[in-house]
Image (cartoon, rainbow, N blue to C red; front, side, top):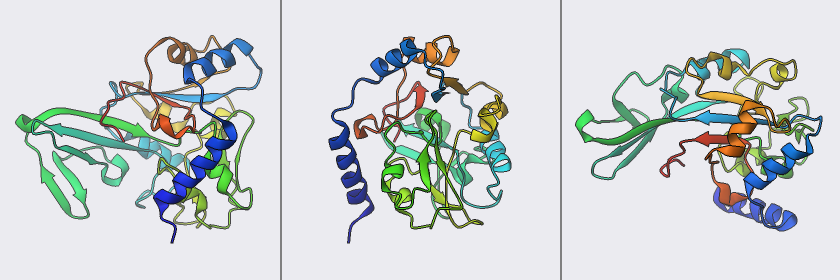
Length: 258
């Protein structure tokens, strides 16, 4: 039986072979910006230095996108990373951080917690996660009915009317951002609040963040502040080696982040 890891590897190898070696991301940005095309190319900028793990973004996303509030599923979430002085790495995201991190105890599993005292901590930080709207999205490649597709402005959407719930896209996503919607029983994920950005509004999570840790921008616009930041400052993406070309860029992405 094909494991999830083997499935993802096979999909990515296929895509990589078709597209050739990935070019340096910064070069792509500069070429796109220089082209100054009229079609937007949406991208997120997440500043881990500014995130405090309050969970306001997660609450706002659930309410905006019709994801049941009590369900253990969410389109975006925040992870807490704690590196102890002994070199132990602890990661948790209780309820996706919907209620923030109100306890110093780290949740290691269902009903399993680890108390971490302040003097044990060498480093701690928060990392918001969401769909990366990959330029080479494996989820689109594996969907057998075309229910998952990529718009001209780069956002990957799911058509609930066409989705048959096979779960291939969930297995193919190397970032684990997809899930079965507990009500509609189809694949679901973040779409940058496409219904809002298409109308000139900001995504719900961006509006809800009181610290400006989340920003959205248009990479096709060289004057966009987010584009300018990505082009000129040090940013990182998750799992760059996979060749999916994520469109969520991080400021202060620590090497411990998975």
